Length: 208
Ligand SMILES: [Fe+2]
Image (cartoon, rainbow, N blue to C red):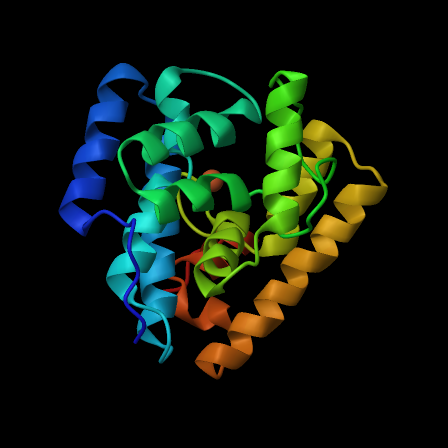
């Protein structure tokens, strides 16, 4: 398995998240932990993803939220923060996790960055060749809530109700569903089979 630089260990990532929780508690903390756990579960079922890397990257993908409530700017804040700590790969994931579809307008929510920051992000995602870790965290973000896992389409509908839809978000939805198919093949079955609670959360009943 390929060794990568710029990723904190599990304990370092947990410490970073814990410190962020002290200044900016919120549902994003549990969401981040769920992304990390799902990424590790899926990684364990593949030959080419390091589960420890997957866990740390999932844990820190939204770390920009440490600076309080914000919209899309959290991806830029997280990128800067982790870059300054020397974790380049984890920093990259902060920016790429929102762009399964590489278009600056393919977002839920709104831009609260300066124009120069938006231009930087746009150029960055255009020039970055995604590896399997970018794709894995994009996928895990698409089905992870703060209280568990959910059918991707159901989370998408929630996002559309909250933020609306445009031509680019339709492309984004397709890109995320393509990622799901990609990882189904990687693990040899539906990824939903690996996610605890996804059926109960999606259909609202408990299997006994
Ligand atoms: Fe997220």
